[in-house]
Image 1 (tube, rainbow, N blue to C red):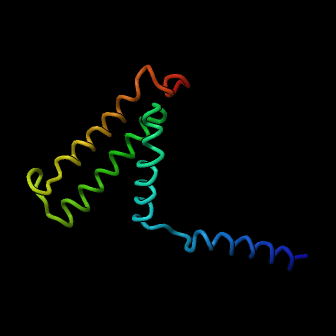
Image 2 (cartoon, one colour):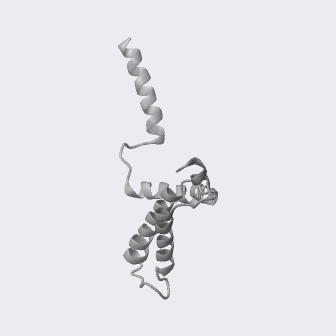
Image 3 (cartoon, helix red, strand yellow):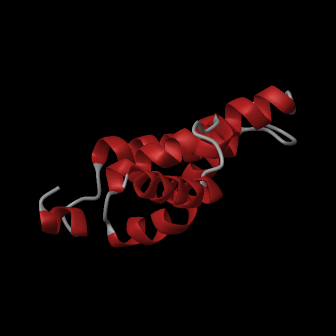
Length: 114
């Protein structure tokens, strides 16, 4: 009986390992998931006014990473001008505005009481 339980447990573990080959996730994997979620699912939810404050935080975090890692870190770009990070900064501020203000009265957030 113990051998059968061990085989079942190992089979499930192998199935899990196929999708998640390692136990820990790197920050780049988390950022990639954040970008996919905020870009695809978030755009639809934001248009409907659902989860606006959570999506605002995700958008702001996404732009913060874009500014700090790509624009300033790798490109050494100035704030404005050629390849500047002024546009990304304005998108980050817009995400923070959504985080602190919410969706408003005409939204699914207001309808469900969030």
